[in-house]
Length: 138
Image 1 (tube, rainbow, N blue to C red):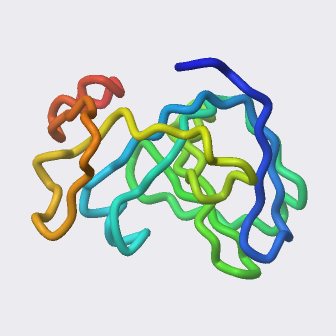
Image 2 (tube, one colour):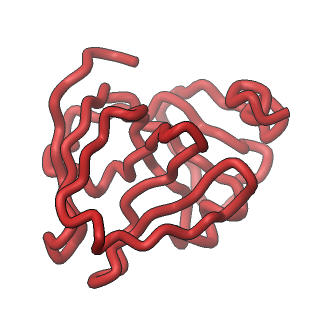
């Protein structure tokens, strides 16, 4: 993780707010679940267990797999996070108040990426199998 900063953000309506320690590295996931949930690739920043939420009762959580769940605001529906077991959060990049310093550095499930979009910057590209291995899921 690059330089760690104190970061904050919220959902679209502002009901759910968060504070977290984050770097500036954005990971892009192209798996079918992320694309279905987001309407396109998921762009998220790893924040680990450093995340705290205000109005946590306004977060709805959907268990999307055996190892992870996704959180969103009950009021406006904004997607907020992807959370691995062990409370490891990936906060969606667009939810941060200041995301101008973010850099797309990694792409996951690159073998699932459809051909209708692409990112021009050079990134580390991992297949689904490589992603599972990196996350300890294989």
